[in-house]
Length: 142
Length: 151
Image (cartoon, rainbow over all chains, first blue to last red):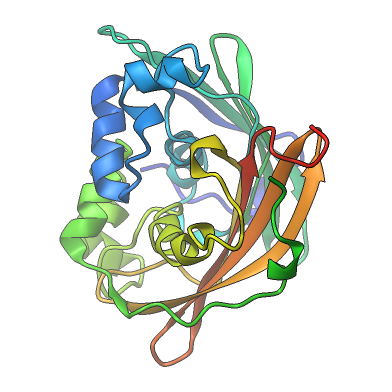
């Protein structure tokens, strides 16, 4: 786990270590089971394409969860996250192959707020296209 | 079919108590591929001041979606579930969910609007302990594609 980040040490523009995540079909099956979201567009290619999608797509909440890790890995305590919101702007299409979809997430300190709070803006893309919009987290730093 | 605007402001009865299990938290963390010790290792979570492993930040959506289902499947609302996608999601935390918590969720329909031929419904879920202490509030915007009047 990363060393504890202190409020006094961060500045607007401080970048968090970026990460990339591979989402394969097995991850969608695992997420469906763990979350209880069994919407067929996340595991059934026949129905996904029938409703006009290019293929099976990842749960937006799975992408949101992966992106959060860039913030929680940076924090000493993942419970220091006090606010986290995203827009799901574009689906992450998950092909039936051994690589899956790659989601790349970067984040930086966007604003230092009062009371040791810091706003972090995140960027998430897959295949060169943004998949999350207005992705922001607020964290409390020691 | 457009959504029934009379649903705005409607609050649903509290969910049955949800007991947060340690193995459920680990299963969820594994499903999102997150090895953070605070989600898996009791001693690591206790070193951070928690009584047990804490749940990843998006875990509360599991509770919220269960509570929202009552509203979503109410035929009078007019939501066609096959056209639904998740548009926005936000969490505001008082504290993280901790294994061993017994939580109650209250869902409220905050808003219904139309934009670009889509119907959008925003549902708030207030998640608290059975003793009434707030833990987290979730805000979910569900988009019903191409169902707005005149589209």
